[in-house]
Structure formats: structure tokens, C-alpha cells
Image (cartoon, rainbow, N blue to C red; front, top):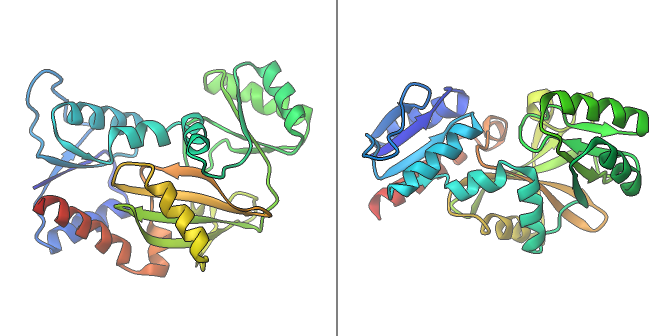
Length: 276
């Protein structure tokens, strides 16, 4: 049996639960909001836990505690911990020689402005954690930087994740990786914005990449434990740059292109886990 840990049931969770039931994969549904974790004793959770919490902190805590009790958490604590923090992700990609945008982290507003001048405008500012493109800003000058960084001070810790802006087509690439294999690859096109997040109204199209680009995506996926992740890449004059990895990947947009393939790949992954 698989313990399916969630906090909100979105489209992906509905489809996964339905598919698991259709395939006669027994699941134990656990609402993380209403179930405490016993840190010093046994929890009512099976040997395999599929963690699909929208909250990064819930995913982080659940995966760590369950793994400490010898439960196989998908995704693992290491995946949630590394990919849930953009500073960790960029450093980890660079350490493993994965091409990624030139990126800095500053720890004061004044230094962040100095760093932005050193990088050269425009500069991309992102919160260290978060999704759906929230507060991601294309900063074009010092005045804009002052405004964005002041807002960041009010909401987040004084941490400024700054990335060199790369000229690219009005799209990026999202690869969905299941158990170290590519399940789907799509182009995500921007809509009334330079951001390509589908949450913001972007459109999708099947991506046709050459073998070298696919190999890079697989190599990136293999840096992490077996699981279900999204890898975001952008095209540049020097080839693909991997700029983000997602531990709770959404695939509704990709499913418009690939149909049930992604859900079937995930179900098959769990079938194999249960057999072994």
C-alpha cells in the first residue's frame, strides 16, 4: 500500500488518486493538515509514502521524519531540501557541472544593489523559495532594484537571489522526470509577460530537443534520488541552461499535450516500488 500525503487536492492529485485506484494500487490518503506526526513512535503510514503537499515545509518535515523511520518517501528529503531552496539548487547544479545561469546571493539590500550593478542590468530577482513566478522580477535599473528589494525586506529574510538575465526565445523548457527517465518535455511560452509560468497564462507546446539536450536533462535528474521532479531549462547561445528544479511538479499543462502518459509513468513507478 502507498500512503498518499497531501494538503490540497488539485487537478494532479485528483488524477493520480483516480489512476492509482483504477490500477488497483491500494492507497492510504493522509491529509497532512489534520494528521500529526509522531516523532518518537510509529505513524499510521505504510512503507512507501507519496508526498504531494503544496506546502514546502510540510513536504520537508514529512519526508525527513518518515525517512528517519525507514519509510521510503517519494520525493525524498534530499530532493525537497535541495530543490526547495534556489540558493542550494544553483550551487548544487554548478558543483555537478550542470550549465546554469550566472547567479549570486546577497545578504543585505545595499550589497544586492552593488551585486546587481556588477552583474549588469537587467537582473532577475527571485525569492529563495516559492513557485508560480510570485515576486520574480526583471530589474532594469537601480531605482527599480531599490523598490523590489525594499518589498523583499518586508516579506522575506534579507536574502537576495540574483541571476544574470539571458536573452532567449519567449519560452522555456519544462521536462518532467519520473524515476530518472523523461516522461514529457514541453515548451512553455510567455503570455503578456517575460515569465513563462502556466499559472500566469502561458501556453504549452511539445518540445523537440536533440539528443544532447535530452542527455543534459537526464543527467540533471540523475543528480537526485529516484522520484518525480520537474526540470526547467532555457535556451541560450551556449546551449541549454538549467535554471530550476521542482520537487512538486505540476503537469496539467503537459498533459494537454501528452494525455495520460505522465500519470501512467508515475503509476508504473509506484507499481515497481511495491514489487521490490
